[in-house]
Image (tube, rainbow, N blue to C red; front, side, top):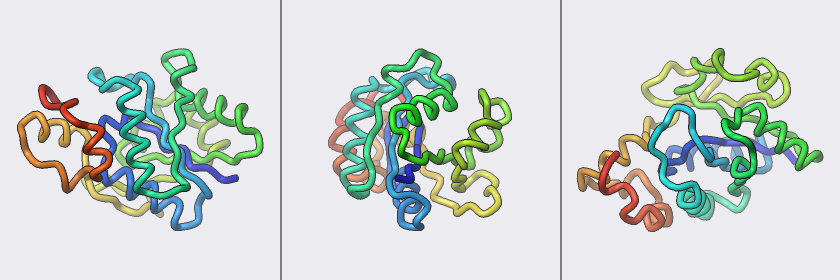
Length: 181
């Protein structure tokens, strides 16, 4: 089975994440998309609790399609868990699967600083997706520039976010981000 590993903080997951997951599957690049919420994120200090982000990802998966699931392997890996190590752990756990990494344009320029990026690129054939507001990688499709940071700020300011988060995810968000972005 061909699986796209789509990792991130998902703090919270939003329509942009859903569009990327759907596109990766609908274009036939993979058979399944696994959302992989980071257990701890090296660049983000304030994360909602892991179990809450998992629940929000499960809510997103429920509206995107039956070929999307949530994988929580990072909960069981040493921290920091580098992307290469996560992919290797998944490959060891599921030897019959072919894994590909989904990478957004917002992080493509940072990959030179990633732990073992060359090995990731060689073993896990990254799927690069564009994101409005960032240079579009060659061959990538641009997706709306929806941002979890913006969503948290909007919630904290009492502004509407229904146009940015699918209803089942919004139900899981509840009052989680009302105090601070």
